[in-house]
Length: 240
Ligand code: URA
Image (cartoon, rainbow, N blue to C red; front, top):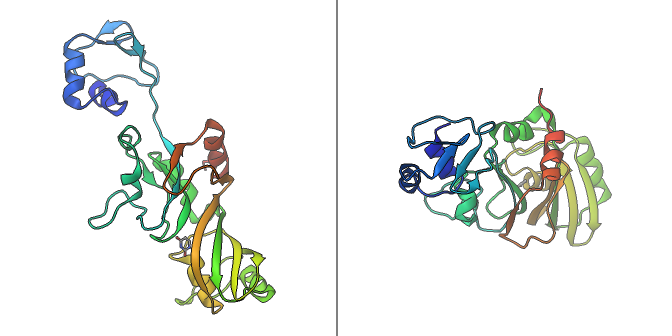
């Protein structure tokens, strides 16, 4: 990796500022001053320092966000605010992207990372990583719905969903439920309830694989995943 790119990624300044650090002899690689920004280094094995400070290279960044309503889960959008717009500069410069999508009006657990392989594995249809949602439903959700979801319901396009686990929290004219699905079809939860004649009026993702939304994150807040949480995701989606 080019030393100027690495240092810019690690927040040591813009490419121009990094060039200045290099020119001024402040950057050392394995004890030797390095002045050429185009020089390649091995971030994982070389000892890189800027002034007195050792650069601890982080290859990947993993963020847990409590996605708010009204924000698009994409990296850029011409008209609307995106989840990446909510990130501070020191996180955004690592160029994380959302792992899968939540609808604009869906809230809750969203993982953002620049680890393309982990993202790919978590979303792979074959891995069946479960996702749990909390929802408010216009209509009385019943035991019949629970059995139907367990078998799989036919969506508007004829697709029959994989077995899903429905937990009924409140069964009334306005119901509250938790639903765990192992796939991620477009608007899946909303369409599953439409298939049984009911309407989702509020939707929030609580869990993805073994990773739970941190209840201390208020809407729109985010934090980095802990090492243990990253391990949970790795275990949920083992490499082939
Ligand atoms: N199902 C939906 O309908 N919407 C989401 O955002 C996620 C799952």
